[in-house]
Length: 231
Image (cartoon, rainbow, N blue to C red; front, top):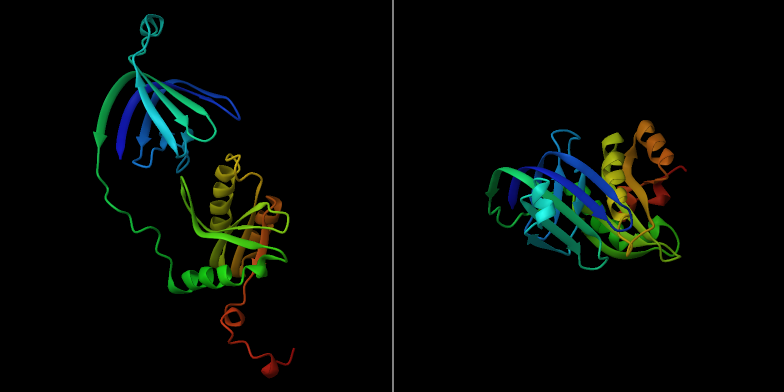
């Protein structure tokens, strides 16, 4: 991973256009080809980014660009959509690279990991006609637990928790925001699935157009004996 702190301006062109005026920012370049532009605020969320697969070209500025103070141009092009991110570097303060090695990924606790496996095997619990695409669908900000398609073929992102709270809904919201920028996936809807969902989380999810789903862990494991229940 390469980390660069530089005074720069950033322009994005593609499905939407965006401009970040000249300021000091953190530029994060990952080995998977992605680039993220961060400010000293906004918590986890980059100001702009380009997800892989993409290519980076470092270009020399022309005379007119040199006259405005630009010393280097980074041109990042998405391989599938031709979206373009251009970083105009004016001054570099630090430039460091680190080999992070192979990351083991997010390790879920036993119940959440088993819930994910069971729901992938019983994908019909999401609704009639749903089919599994894959587990642990990777995005630039982390893996979505399950990517599925509904009966119409539309993409569905599923976030799984043992106990669903507001943080889990926020997490799924971030995934959906990113995934809906991918023309090969959009439109993507969300399902927040858990053994227990707090009322505030349910309200927030529904307000954002995210469906909620209560999971019966025992029933999914085949341990629910309907003959022994009163109701």
